[in-house]
Length: 247
Picture 1 (cartoon, one colour):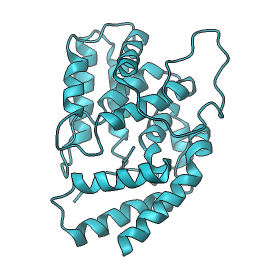
Picture 2 (cartoon, rainbow, N blue to C red):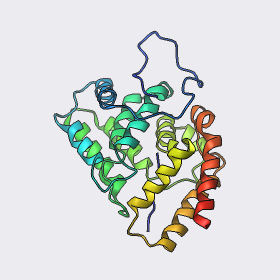
Picture 3 (cartoon, rainbow, N blue to C red):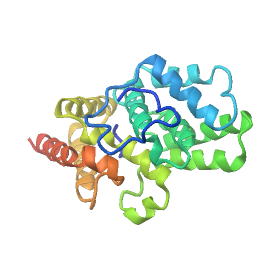
């Protein structure tokens, strides 16, 4: 059984010439972007790639994110991720690619399936190529989406630092771990709902293994801005979740 190791500021990117954001710009865990702000990130991402998004694609993705079986991997998760992107995009060499990868990273979400990331990544690459994006860019976005499978939690910090876009994407995807306690508990409950078909003992064992795996890492979040905002609370949340599982 596979329990996915991904779990989960609301303003548009700063205009050119404005003061660069600092580590203290994001002082709290973000609320999700509203529909208008989400649409703005979509258009900004494709504009930065120099092409127009395929007609109807955003609506198709929003329908996928809104499927009724999704309890955690839903539009709220997408909105929280892109809210952090609006604040941290200046840490990315290719922020448009990161944004597109975030839009696609849970586009396919079938609980207990092993091909969600691969299918999501392939969907992203197909759409990028059909829009006229070059193959290298499409491959990078494909690889970013695949990284959200979190199959290499033992990857070294130096390995991630060699790819700042992947580091940023993964920190954003895992930001829910450092959310306020009430948000984290809601996330924990929603993950359980998505795996309702898994029996209690099996779920508890698999979930505890995932949560402990994060605690066993030298750092839960890799980027400086993510660690400053989320690392301490993530440790508290993970230990609390493990305690609940043990009861």
